[in-house]
Image (cartoon, rainbow, N blue to C red):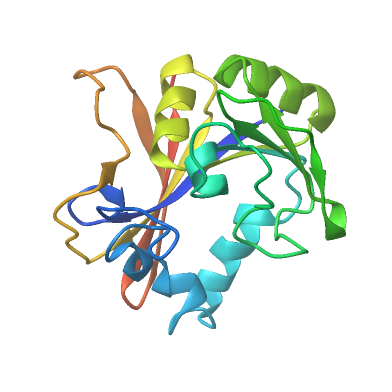
Length: 204
């Protein structure tokens, strides 16, 4: 049975993206500060390297929202957009993108093929599970996709990379959940300069 991991970088005030997301600011204003642990000054720390490797290495399938895939909204039209990551994205596995608009699969270098799913999170999960064949599945975000996965009960563990940043607005990971809706058990705490890596098991 596939184990499903949700991994997201989060601010001290609970945001996973800052306000006003756009092509210029894909993570919202200030959102890139949440990722300094793996793309900035902290990327060479051994704990951060371990966590970054765990996020991608060995994943058999990935699910993400359309907002994470790119800034294009509405019908795709003749947009040439293929994601933020260039010709060889870091996923190296099939990626299932939630969208309301049909799009042909996009096959890129390194084993990444983007499949576009119009039937919701459970349809994406069923496709990911079938292709993963028992291997691990990643819920890559953004916030809406993550909330849908949590609400659907398909997440087994949550990795949060907590940075001492205050964004003051944007997208929160746990918005909309009532008290007691999620039962989490702290499973691991790792520390590096400027970030604490928290792992929670989701208890059903």
